[in-house]
Structure formats: C-alpha cells, structure tokens
Length: 292
Length: 315
Image (cartoon, rainbow over all chains, first blue to last red; front, side, top):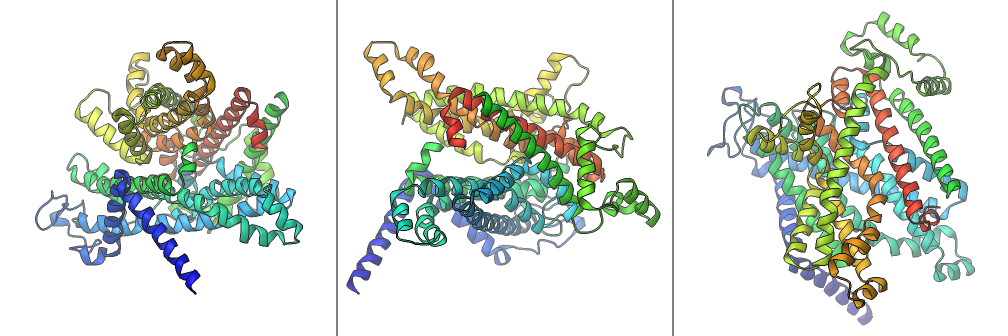
C-alpha cells in the first residue's frame, strides 16, 4: 500500500514537474495559453456565440465589425464571430478524430509489419509507399467530390494518408527494439510474439509517437481549413475557418474583414498547437529533437 | 550502388502502377455510379449507358483496371471534356508550370534556409538563433492557404511589387520570373523554416566533430571552417528530405496557383473538379503522383550516393 502511494506521488510530481518545465519555456507557455483558449472557445461555442452561425440576414451583409457583430457579417449577413467559434469546434474535432484514428491504425499496422512474417511486412510497406505516392491535397480534390464533400470525407482522407507516416515509424522502432537483449530474453522464455509487442515493446515506443502526433494536430487543422477553402471539406451551412477564408477571398474587393476573421483563429490554432507540441517534445523527449 | 538504384527505380515503377490502379478502383468503388458522377446534372439514362459502355464500366473490375493501366502507360488519359482534346495535351500545358514553380521554390528555400540555419548553428543560443528558431517553427506551421492569400494581398495587391495574377505567359523571360517570384516564395515559405532547422541541427553536430576541432587547432579561420568544410557535410540531410518536400510543396502549390490564378496542376484540378471534368482531374492526380514518385526515388538514390549507409537503413 505504502509503496503504491509513493509511486503515485512520484508520478504525479513528475507530471507536475514536466508541466512547470513546459510553462517555463516561453514557447510552451504561449502554446498552453493559446490551446486552452481555443479548446474553451470550441467547447463553449454555443454559449459564447451571440448569434446562430447559420442565421441568414441579407440586409446586413458584409458589414465591418460593430458592437453588435464583433467580427462583422459575411455575404449572407451571418455573424462572423459565431461562425468562427463554431468553426473552431469543427477544426478541433477533425484534428482530434483524425489524429486518434491515424495513430491507432498506424501503430497496429506498424507493429504487425515490424513483428509479423516477412511477406506481410513487405505487403504493408508496399501499401504505405503507394498511399504516400499521392500528394494529399491533390488526392483530396480528386476523390473528395466523389465521396461527397463533408466532415467524414475530410477525416477519411487525412486518416488514410497519415497512417503510413505513423506505421513506418512504429515499424522501424519495433524492428530495432526486437533486436534488443530483453526481447531476445523474453522470446527465449517462450513468451508469444503478440504479448512481447503489446506488453513490452509498445510501452517503450508509444511516448515519442504521441508527441509526434501532438505535433501533427496543427497540420490537420490547416488541412481541414485548406480543403474547406477548396470546396471539398466542410459544407455550408456548417462553419469552418476555411469556408470563412473562401468567402473572404471571393469578396475581398468589398471587405477584408472576412479574410482576417478566417485567418486569425486559424493562425492562432496552428501556432498554438505547434508551439505546444515543440515544447512538449523538448520537455519530455529531447532525443526526438535531433531528427528535427 | 547500381543495384540499389535499379531496385529503387523498380520499386518506384511498382508503386506507380499500384497508385494508378488503386486510384481507379477507389473512384469506381465510390458510392453512386461513376457515369452519373461524371455527367453530373446532365445525366440522362441514355447518356449514362453511353458513358458506361464507352469507359468499359460494365466489364469485370480486374479487366477494367488492366485496360486502364495499359492506356495510361500508352499516354492515353482520355479526353478533356472541356477542350475536347486528349487529356495529355492539357497536362502538357499545366505540368511544366507546376514543375517550374516547385523548382523555383526549392531553390529559394535552400538559398534562404541553408545560410539561416548555418548562422544560427554558429551563433548557437544567440538572439539570432532564437529568432530564426521561432520564425522557422511559425512558417512551418502556417497553413499554405494563409501564406498564399496574405502574400498576394500584401506584396501584390497592396505594395504592388509583383504582379498579382497569371504567369506572365508570352511576355518574355523577365516578366515570367517577375510573376514567379512571389508564388515561389509562398510555396517554399514553410520549407525555408524546415531547411533552416535541419541545417542548424546537422551543423551543430558537424561542428562538434573531431576534424572540425582539429581544423580549429590548426588555426584555420572560423569562416573557412564553417563554409568550406562543415557546411558541405551539414547540408547532406537536406537532400534526404527533398522527396518529402516536393510532396508538401505540391499541396501548397494548389493554393498558390488558385490564389494567384497561375496555370498548373493545382489550378487545373480545382477547375476540373468544379466542372466535373473527371478525365482531367484523374490525369492531374496521376501527373502529380508521378512527379512525387520520381522525386522520392531520385532523393533516395542521391542519398545512397552521398552516404552508402543509407542503403542499409532503408532495407
């Protein structure tokens, strides 16, 4: 009992220490603040939004910021602040769901490739190489309209194209870990392959993978906005920062507020998550830094 | 080495075949029938039947894939529904423009990124190093669509330093370069940061090696050590990432071509998708994948040439 208590206490203080170190790095502190603000604004979007984001009111279209509409209105008279807040919800959900799915599937495939039979390894690696042969945005433009623009398609494309990235890293780590002495010893003891990978190798490699994944969140956020801008992502009346940017770009001669309203949250989100990811990596796994 | 290069090219070819086939299957396996998707609102039963027969969509899938592969390898990518010309002709106009943009972006990002990373490494932990570090991280993270829009608004529409739209076709080399510079910077911006970080990291490693210490002990001037000896080794890792870089930049190029109304694969695709010009959008993806596969294959072979240990690592 007392032993486990000390253990929890040490672990807790290790996490607390890590957090303090994270906050002492200016980039980390900025990242934590920006990301916290973003998550709060997305979670409470329905409370914070002064208007219904889909409510059309054409007579007041393309207005500059005012006391009533803090970020002005778009070409249909919708309140841009409300749309930006709801857009944050979409951006964060796409990023989190895509990260979780691609890491999950990537880790499983990577482990199978690294520890499974050689033919299966070759097959998986070939599949990874094939997927990586498509430039993501261009592939999305081609298949997006066929599967129908929307959240599911965006997430599907992002997940499929990022699985090989995680899969390859996990595969390489599993292969190098399986040469380690302790794995040889476990094998000699008669432990099954699956158990060795799941119980002994995975815990060793999952930390760096999760840090890499946190650094990919801004990439997904940017991709969602980009695809929505191109018309193969989120569709109106749903809201997305990419859609606001697209409207802003189309109506740039009338007003530049829309472009600003679309880009400020997008820049904040990508920078916030990037700074946080970088600081997390430096704090918890400085070894990763070498590879840039 | 030669065996490795041959193997790598073979693998590249195999991946290309697989990429073409899976794209074809993916598009045909999509919900709804492809003939109506291709026709869009114009679909009538008669037209749909005609398209289905013309494209051989009524045949078994493996036969279709095989036929499609054969025709692609023969350069037959179908007919551009808008210009009524072979898709290959349309691609011949647009692909070189994207290649020119990618080439210019790679050059610019190397020309700016390498010196920045180099100086940051030499003056490690100085203010310059920190500023370059934060700027690199920020531009790497910045979404391409933002860089494209603001680059256009500030430098073309606002300051008027460069033309806002087009590629300066038929206006002579100088005008074309003038049209190219801002889009190339916009496409390469993230890569400037990436290269700067990469060069900084490897430069720091090289500067701590024994032969650099030796050179210092011999009293060689620091400038000479850094630029003549260390840099040559420190830039090697940038070659390794050219393959990845081309993939990332091609994504940025889509936004840049659309925002700057530059002809190229991205703009071609965007318009083809709006007009449901499927043969063109398929052809454009294939062209883009082909470029990407060639780039990764070349960068792997180049890597093996620079450092034979790479062959072992990639096994």
